[in-house]
Amino acid sequence: MSKTVLVLNSGSSSIKFGLFGMSAAEPALLCKGLLDEHETRPRLVVKSPAGDDLFEKQRKASDPDSDHLFVDVLGFIEDRFSDRRLVAVGHRIVHGGPDYSGPVELTDDVYAKLEALTPLAPLHQPRCLEPVRTIKAIRPALTQIACFDTAFHHGLTPPANRFAIQRRYEKRGVRRYGFHGLSFEYVAGRLAATAPQLITKRTVIAHLGNGASLCGLRDGRSIDTTMGLTPLDGLVMGTRCGTIDPGMLLYLQQHEKMSVEDVQRLLYHESGLLGVSGISSDMRVLLASGEPAAREAVELFTFRAAQQVAMMATTLGGLDCLVFTGGIGEHAKEIRSAIAERLGWLGMRVDAAANDEGCERISSSDSTVDVFVIPTNEELMIARHCAAVLRQENHI
Image (cartoon, rainbow, N blue to C red; front, side):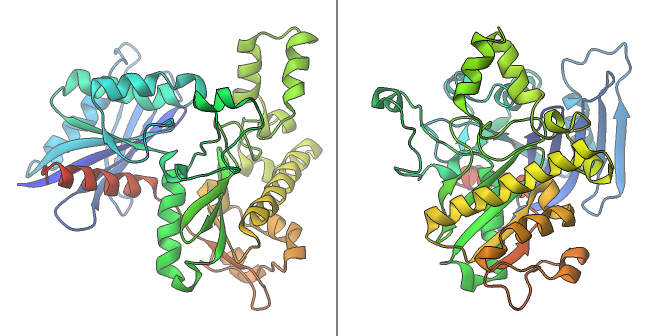
């Protein structure tokens, strides 16, 4: 009987998932879906790899929601793919801390260590770990595997991974970790396949979405990134502030009399595009709006992105390639154009027609920097990591 792995990619209010067959060298997507918890009645949608509807269910208001529809997901898998055996569930875990540089089976000890990292990612870590608890309760014998967003950056070295604070805090793990590693790892692999001549070149990948960060690569390895100890640092995001004067936090507490909880809510949930525009955290809404505040939020987003691409270029000693990915990076041609225009002094030029059409390569023939748009696939990256762990343990 062939085997499958269920991949869960948990967001702030929804969970993307994919079921992958493990019979070949490369995991093969069998179906994909979404557990949407935006509303009071959570909804499950399952589609084929081609996007055809396979299954949909919405919980009744009177139903308990403690299982988050996972019973329905597993039931659908076991019914639809009865000729295959589900052997593991792979999870995207945002923070792996200093201990985890690669995927690992989620034992009770590992789970406890990851839960202890919640203060470093209070918006994300609990959401990533919640499905682990749920699946353990309903399928205790099922292997679960953690794949970390920090792992790709685990090789960061001083000075890129260091804060200018007392060294005793660094010894306790207070350093720059970086995130979006699963996305960066996948896109780096796709770039190597698409343009192998760029493997050794100085490349920046821009993962632009509701969460956003940059990664500077050389020889396919992460050399620098814009997020740090937590997913708050760096670029302007949907509701997160990005880089900010730490003195402002002292001001808010001392003079605005904000509590730690108030500041945390402001920085994670009420800042970024939403905070500046006062309209929305959704870039699509802001681009369609005629309000000055919406334009100002978009301008700040592109200004900060271009500014920090240049910062990555400083680390790399130049810039040969820029890759856009993530929801905004892949779909917002206006944002790609605006960022590239701000980086024109580096010799970057975008071909307007290629950019409008969403081509893979969008740089013009006279550009000194190659510019690409490469869709990310974190679920496939997680499936690959799970396959490696399962093969190592002779489970597949």
